[in-house]
Image (cartoon, rainbow, N blue to C red; front, side, top):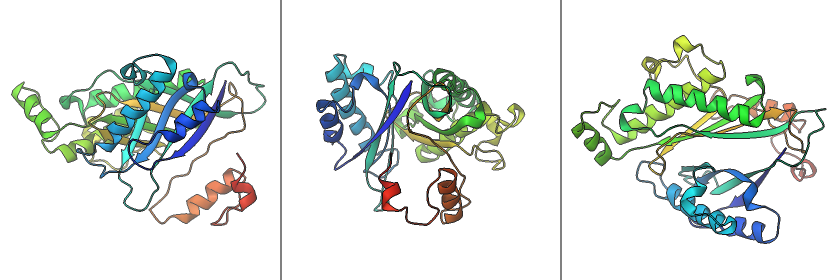
Length: 292
């Protein structure tokens, strides 16, 4: 198998022109698209429509090219978008493709990508043990599908989980369901934290005895060093993308990670550059930047 990653700029939340052009030029086979990650315009809050808008536009494009309904595309392809760039990031999305027909040499590890989905989650599941457990199970499934044999070879786990509006929470209360908080924004935080704890449990970063809902947003000694978690009203399951290294894959791409101690931790960034064989200087030389 071989994984490739294609990055496209995003002029507005409906802009899928980059992917459309890549498909038309034969650069990307839409059948081989397995996941999409991106950063959209918007505020990143519960009412941010840009995530779902881009998901819809991409689903329609991919579905139209492979001859399936748009709604069925999202059942096999995670579209994980985080809203809100505030002039710091450029809106963009990255498309992951997998070619299963390319054999690996088994001589070195290459980028491996696996995806999985949890069952549907309700308001009462968010921030609770069920979300932790289902996320951990899905991470294991994604690792298995990617042929990643060891947690040490997992370098990035992106999760997108559900968010709920005030109306959803009121409806849950009327149905007799409990919830971690009745604040929609805070509930997003509980969901992100529980999902990250599920990743940590799956990878052995924390023991099962500590991967408990009592720790969610309370015990900050338990965490995952590879999890990135977002939440939005456009999904009702936890979508999982696992990226790592495996001998079962081929291709020129690799992956590594470092944990930053704070937002200004440049040392971790330069150390990561060294891990990847790049210049540790703040500016990567143009010759290296142009390499795949």
